Image (cartoon, rainbow, N blue to C red):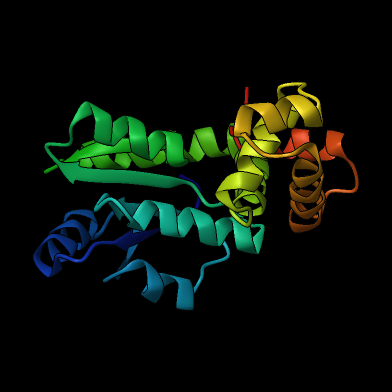
Amino acid sequence: MNNGTSLFLVDGDVRRRAAISHLLAGSAVHVEPFEDPSELIARWPKSGLLLVHDDGRSIGMLLAQMGRLGQWLPVIGFAQEPSTRQVVGAVLEGAIDYVSWPFTREEIIGVVEQAEAKAEVFGSAKLREALARSRVDRLTKREREVLAGVAGGLSNRMIGEKLSISPRTVEIHRANMLTKMGANHTSEAIRIAIEAALVS
């Protein structure tokens, strides 16, 4: 941690926010607490890390904001006794790490240091993923299905058969999909889908 680290804490529980802020007082980690994601979004930081209580929506909201802004910040999720499914879900959404509450000062400082190191390695890839996800999020369910079919190498006729719609309707969805994603051609839409982890 060079020259200290700004850690933006997002947690609806006032006691836990106070406990975490107190835990890191006097360390090289400067904590700025926020009650909810919208409060942080209103004062979006240029750099730092986010420590976000995993309430099932906050991590996703903040990652969507990053996609809109085209600026990625590392997210560390945390919860009290999280299930494996909860941890995996947060990481798949884009969290760089996850920690179980309550944690010690040494534990959270170690997690922050690791997140900073990972951010240097994964930063540009995570930013591309966040941007791609924000573009895919603009699509309707049907347009996503058409995109998945296109990415799978299916023709309009085959996609239509699979979705029980006409090839002409597939063409319309395909054109709408390209427009909404800001893609000039199908191969660009497929690249965006891959970066968004929509297809592999």
